[in-house]
Length: 178
Image (cartoon, rainbow, N blue to C red; front, side):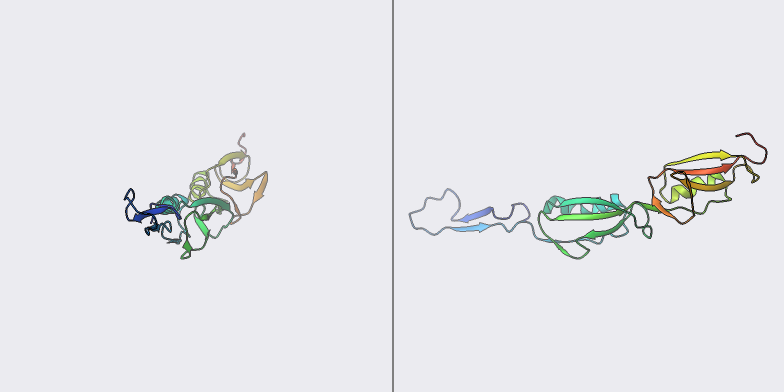
């Protein structure tokens, strides 16, 4: 029974409050709890979609769902990498479900592009924490020279936490004042 916790009486025969004589047999119907469900395949879904997808099961089966952040750059940032238990495995009432969500994004190759294009490419990769710093350079004004994280230049394609601050180093052009 999905509504009555396992181990609790659902009904009796004869019905409750029926007068009985000593030794009369009473049959108890005991709930086995919610029917087990099957873990859905959440891999590749955005975290918000995974939460919505699990919401009915969480309520019916009283699941304990935990979201863990992992660095898996082969999966888009913000998406489910894997679950424990895995997809298609039976899940029971009260079971703990761990959903692993990727927080890594790959830095796009933005060198020699404009700062505006660099910002758009970073946003596409789910990077939201960025800052533009300018330096005098022989490259044309507004040309991206490099990306830095934690004070060091980082190569395009490097996987980092999308919440990291990315510094976009941009040229002010030859002979310009910074």
